[in-house]
Image (cartoon, rainbow over all chains, first blue to last red):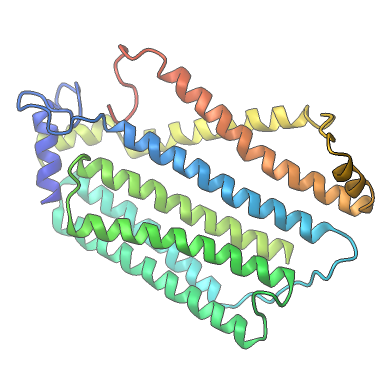
Length: 210
Length: 102
């Protein structure tokens, strides 16, 4: 269905001439809003999220660098590595899913899209396990400043991942009305790849900084 | 695969889009680093209490504060440069769309 809709939108907009993608050509304006608006909106949202996490990292650097504090390095749960692999794999499946969409392979697109959502859910489950391991080692939210930052970082990131999974599932069950499927998948992919990069950054912060 | 889809893929190959995105991001980060490098002597100690607290925190504390400020500065300036670049690229609405999306 998605593939046929995108093919239809390209055909309606005279994709061969490259005039306008998804704005309607001879058949009237099916998508009245320019599609790049959604891409720009997502980029601006990503900028806000980047600033949000930059503030966390900045606070972490200052708190860790202050002398005479009770800062102690925390042992990272080993399952974080598995979670990282899951998230990276989900990024790859999403990229392949988009490629299938553009090539008109609808069944493959849906298959890899669903697999991306499942891997994302697996990542969240892994984060829950990591928190339980931290608790089992006696590291609670208020135990040490390092543990506090770990919980705040991972929880904030997990909430954003939850939003990404919601977007993936929404697009699985319901076609967007104002976006072409290509735009919708592109916007979701932007968000998802950003979250993957963000997670690698968070992991690097904890690995390098302790 | 329909001809329309094939032409669409040919018009917007993934590598070209990725290269453009990375070039823009690299330009924004370079601009941010350039501006940040000349902003080290900015007289930003307007609050006497903050100044006293920073001065009393010792060498390590001052270094931590400097690093924290720098970390906040880089993404903020990168965003500023990125938005400026976006505005410049889309300065003429009558111009044919150069982005992937119209």
